[in-house]
Length: 250
Ligand SMILES: NC(=O)c1ccc[n+]([C@@H]2O[C@H](COP(=O)([O-])OP(=O)(O)OC[C@H]3O[C@@H](n4cnc5c(N)ncnc54)[C@H](OP(=O)(O)O)[C@@H]3O)[C@@H](O)[C@H]2O)c1
Image (cartoon, rainbow, N blue to C red):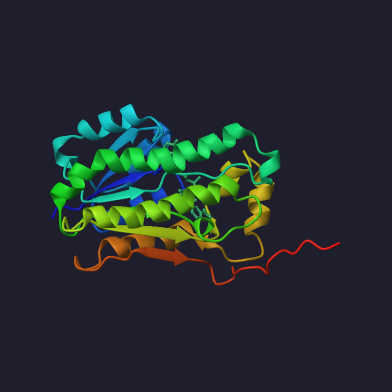
């Protein structure tokens, strides 16, 4: 099987680290994101064939077009990493701008299904040993204040991943939901709309996961023997755990 990976959200964080990790092992890469200059910079760093696509995953027509016009040498993709995503509005639900909820649903849910739908025929053609890695989150399983729609979109990712497994039974295509906990990327900068102090404060004095830690998990999942499917991989830093239930008292 040809080793060609399609990674969404490759301009930053997990996606960029994954591109570097798979490149180390000689995979050819299709890398997408909205920030074209970052894609070009990443391509110039990598020593493997790379096809970059400026792509907003929310635009289903653009996604379908990008997939149907993949150059021949990148057409036989055997790994899709559905990584593009974001959280917005860390404040409580009553104070959130509705647009932020829509943006999270449009990106984390609609965007992810847009890319999956467009890529399924290719992955099924690639068959045994090919994989879809969907990037979920611990927020998809565990509630916390300020997670509202973000956590709900990641719960969708988890259930969609399991349901896909049912429908891909017999094709050899594997599906995994990788659900990271606290990880230092541009995630919090995006969530706080550019508040660098908030981002630095969240990650300081502890040891969050790095983008490379998650890229390594992606590589592990995608390169396991063909008969093994990791359904869900939840990964937290050792220094992160759960809090007690909140109880409202008089
Ligand atoms: N960091 C964490 O603590 C954490 C924990 C659990 C899960 N996650 C999940 O991990 C994934 C990657 O996040 P990250 O932590 O690596 O954050 P990041 O550094 O902000 O990277 C997010 C990536 O998603 C892309 N993206 C966002 N909206 C997009 C859109 N509409 N169309 C195309 N690409 C889009 C961004 O590219 P452009 O802006 O260039 O388009 C960027 O490459 C997300 O799904 C996130 O929810 C993160």
